[in-house]
Each structure stands twice: as structure tokens, then as C-alpha cells.
Image 1: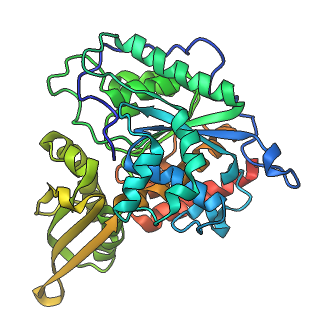
Image 2: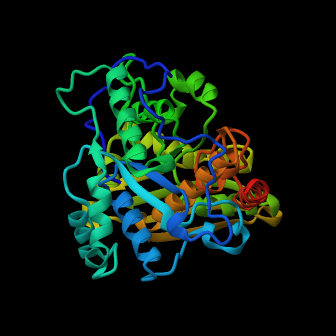
Length: 412
């Protein structure tokens, strides 16, 4: 994931007041999907505002969305395109409109070409969806704070919220969902004083602009203590954090299995090898610690305690956007017999994350249209570190997601 911020500390706390002008998030009773018989081109349009909008994940999201809506590729990996989510009030894919914030300058079409050269995107796809990539790129606004930026937190949050409001009003959007897909930040407090990290500035801007918020990263974002009261008063749905795409996805299946079969886990160790922007960001020990906290939560929640063992994240630039995750599980069986399970997960980080981002944007938009507000633990299926109230078992999370689908269907 691309780094959407400079790494410089942001400035002081922010207030929850809305930005001037019409909010980017429409009233909660604005329909999210298309009533039966309504042509898609007449349906309300939904904005998807990506933080880290020129990174690998965001570029794959936009290119993949364009390929699916053009009929060039099937929606593999998108649970919202499966039968259990029919009639849930989800905005049709064709009605999504993309924009975002980033400090990077590389245009999306060029970024897509680089991803295709690395095997992340299919050969020829960047050219086939060039118009859609260029349209999304034209809606990307400068992020921050950049080195030397002297604006306060108030000024930065106001500026980001104004970008959201202009995006929505200029395109006639029913609502805009903000999704953070930028690189992982270190946990707040390491020399930052009382200044908010960039992820929390963007989250504050989403609240001011009336936009539902999704945190696909382990960064502080909306969970920063300074934003807790504002989030609670906002009347907006929000969810997160840290998308579950590979190693932790497996852990959320395997850890409940060991407990349910009464097999005592003696130790659980793991290693992640990855490159690209995410690998570079996670080379920072503080950022890696923030990422590992969510991975550890799955084990402690499902096993009842955190077993011995360590998890390492190593930056291997040669791997590019690809990652390899290895887990070594030492466990004890009948009559004290000691056994080992090893797993290897090799995948493309952006291709694993992109369909989840599209799912989350659609589900959160539908939740907003249905009048839901506050945290959405029912979306824990997608996250390593979901909001309190969500199980860490994938099977339990799936049932909670289906229950949310039924609830949304009642309002559709």
C-alpha cells in the first residue's frame, strides 16, 4: 500500500464541527441501491474516497472495478456479488465513483502499468480501462501533511473535508464512503506530542463531511482517543480495522479448529516476507508492531490465551507486491503426543485486498442508507482487529455478516 502521508507529525486536536457547505454524506434515508426496474444510469451514485489513492491497493481497486463493470473479468473474491447479498440495498457497482487523497504524484494509469508489469494486473488491462483510471486520478486531491506544511490540525481537517464536500456536490453523489488504504503508521505517541497522525486527520475530515468511514489499515484512524466523542456523536456508520487478506485469514479458521477439537496449542510462530510500499512501511519496527497486534488478537481471542511464539515481518523489496506468510504451529494431542502444523500462504496483497475494499464500501454505504450508525462489528469478517462485539472466528464472523445482510434487506 502506498504511503499517503509524509511521516511528519500532524498538528493539534480537531473539533467535530462539520465543514462549511453541503456535507459529502447524504441523509441516511437516501436510497443506496436501484429500485426494481430503475435503469442503472438513473440510480443514485455513491462515492468511494480512497486515502492512499495512488497506491497499489487503490489502483487495483479502481482497475478491478472498471474491468468488472465492463464485463472483462468476473468479480472473484467479492462476497457482495454472491447470492446471500442479493436485495440488500447495495449500490450497484456501475454507480460507484472514485476519488481520494494522496501525497504521491504518479498518475493512476502509470501506476496501473507498473502493476501490470509486475504481474499484479492482467496484461493489457491498464490500456483497456485507461479512461476510468484517468477519471479517478482527476478526482485525487493532495494529501498531507507534507514536509514543511505549517497548517494546524483544524486547517488540515477542514481542507480534507472541503475536498470531500466538493467531490460529492460536483458529481451529485448520494453519499461518499471514505476508505483508508494507505500505508501503516506507527502507533500514536512516539514523539508526536498532542498532534494527530495523518490517518486520524482524514478520519476527522470524514466525520466533518458526513461520510461513513472504513479503516482498512491498523493505523489509529478513527480509533484515536481524540476522535472517540466526535465519532459517537456523528450518527455515521464506521468500521475497521486492518483488512484480513492472508495469514490472519488462515489463523481465524485454524485457531478455532484447534480449540474445538481440544488440541492444546503449545506455540504459534510466523514469518511474513513482503515487498512494495507495504514492506517498506513495515520495515519500521513501530509500524510492524501495530500490524502484529491485530494478528495476535485472533489467537488470544479464539484460543483463550496468546501462545508462545513470535511473528516477524521482513521487507524483501524484490518480492514487489507479492507476499509469503509461513506459520509453524506446535500442538499437543492425545496422550501428550506432540505434533506440528505448518502453512504457507503466497499471494498478491493488492489482488487480495481490492475485492474486500469494494465489498466494504458497498456494505457501509447500504448501512448508512438504512440509518445504521456507530461501529459495525458485523463487518468483522473483513478485519484482523474488528470493533468490540465481533468474534475473531471466521465462521462466527460469517454468520454475523449474513445477519447484517438480512437486516439491510429489511430496509432496502
